[in-house]
Image 1: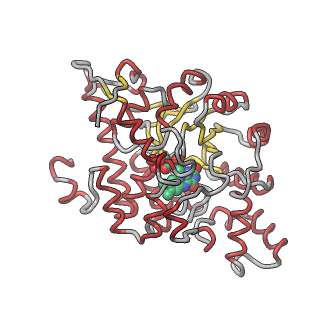
Image 2: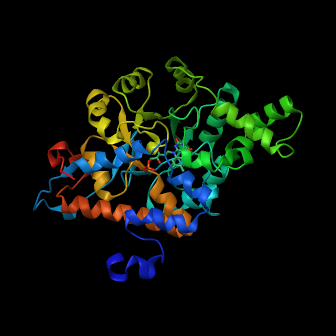
Image 3: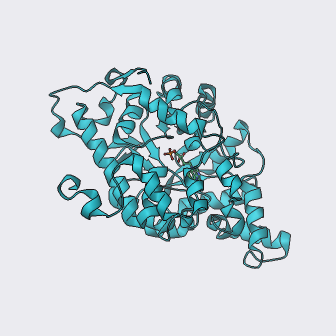
Length: 387
Ligand code: FNR
């Protein structure tokens, strides 16, 4: 379809299929603050660089005449069949990128057969996203509040609204040192943006009203501070506390932000069903190892006990294949889809997702890999070209 028409000519004008140009295009559509928020990373972005460099060092070794017409990219995760090994990563405050926001993207994800993961820091509520993604697969990402009653209320709403997998993000108990955001004094949450999950929560509302004597609508800034204080301030949870989530979430429980083998083993001990090997797209710790570089050792340690997912740096179909070959069962993608959403709302996000899936299909076929289960390390080699 794209070769016939040319993506820039007629499919969705203005949304490139070249992952290297997407960011530049999005920059033209976004104000500087929103752009810096999505494109930025911790410190001097060394971790973001490592994420990409790690992908560049692994190379595929294609095989020939392997009957690729029988290709199938479906996967099974937590006992459910998924059409693709791709998952939309949780990304907060999508309303600052386009008015289509979380609900629009959740709708597109259903259309293209990709699960949508809703962030706790979103501009749409749990209920709105469930309506938009009615027959789709949806996961819920938890920034784990310090208040157990608020946590239980969020879990209950997620469950009642058909979110099947709980993804608990561990690496963001504080916002990181992100120079581009700091220079622009960019904290969308403070202005009431990105707090819809909290503001629409009956337990949080009642708690805020009781403690402050005001309604959320009367004191948006105070309510925002209270909400952020609950989910981002300090590092209140320990590995033992996971028993509370395990007890109160009847479904797959996945920990996001794992980079160390020992933490992966602790996730197994805590009875989790999966982990996301992720460094939050290089947004949290500066100078950290590329996420792909820790994937093999983590898969070797726990891959036969829990489901290992991966994110941070996925930009092309080839990247997806590399992560699968190193043992991930599926991957999450963040920024590229948000760039598409920023450029042209639903249409832009759809084009990026469909492009990534088509690229994956094509590159997998040309590499001689028929099924995701056939992805393995024999199809790869780590090399270091000079320059
Ligand atoms: C994120 N990410 C994120 N993760 C999470 O668990 N909850 C969240 O609310 C957010 N918010 C968020 C906002 C923005 C603007 C970005 C770019 C990322 C991290 C996200 O889920 C994922 O780990 C990374 O985006 C993956 O890296 P790539 O694909 O962007 O390189």
